[in-house]
Image 1 (cartoon, one colour):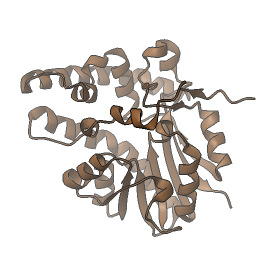
Image 2: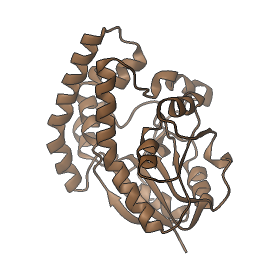
Image 3: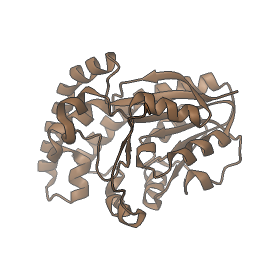
Image 4: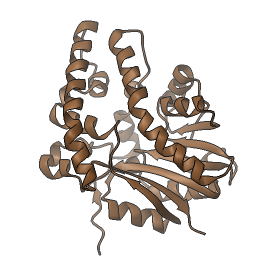
Length: 280
C-alpha cells in the first residue's frame, strides 16, 4: 500500500516502442568540431560513474567480468577498460552494439539480460545506468543480474528519481519522465524495495550524477537545445550552427550545476545511483 511508483498508462506495444530508439539514439563521435567537443565532454562527466563503479569493483573483491547492461555506444566501458578492467557490454539494440564496437572497441552482445550468453557466477559487477525504467519487466533483469554475479559481487544501478525537486517544480516538463520511453518512474523507497525483493541489499546510495543531473535540468528547460534530441529529430543545422547550439546548451548545463548539487545534498537529486550486493 505504500508503493507510489509512477507507471506510464497505457504501455505502448513493444513493436511500437522500437520506433523511439532509432539508430542515431546512440552517440557515435564524428569528425565535426561539435562532435569532438561532445566526446571530450562525455569522457569528463562519465568519470563520475567510473569512480563509483571502481569502488564497487574494489568492494566486490572478486576477479570477474564487469558487465554493463544497456551499454549504448560503449564509452563508459572503454573508460573502465583503459583502467585495466575486464569488461563486456550488453544491449537489446544491434545498432548500439555495432556503435560500441566501432567507436570504442569494446566487446558487446546484442541480447536481453535474461538470455545473456554469460556463465552464471562470472561477473564481479553488473551495471545498469538508466535501464530499469525502460523495461516492461525490471524484475527479470534484476534476478538475471543476481544469477550472473559471483559471491560478494555488486550491482550498480541508476534510475531517474521521481521524488526530485526538478519534478516537483517542472511537472510534466521534467525530462526524467521521457514519455514513452520510460515505462516506470521510481522514487527512492520504491527502487530500494524492488532491489530488496529481487535479493539485493543496498550498500551505497548517490543522488548526484555529473553526467545526468545538470544535463537533465538543462534539457527540461530548453529541450530544443538538447544535442541528442536534435540528432534524433534530424534538425537541419550546419557545423557552425550545431556548434553554437551545443555551446549554449553546455552553458545552461553549467548554470544548472549549483541547483542540482543542492537538491542532491538534500537527497532529492534527479537521479538515484546505488551499489547493492546479493543477500547472503
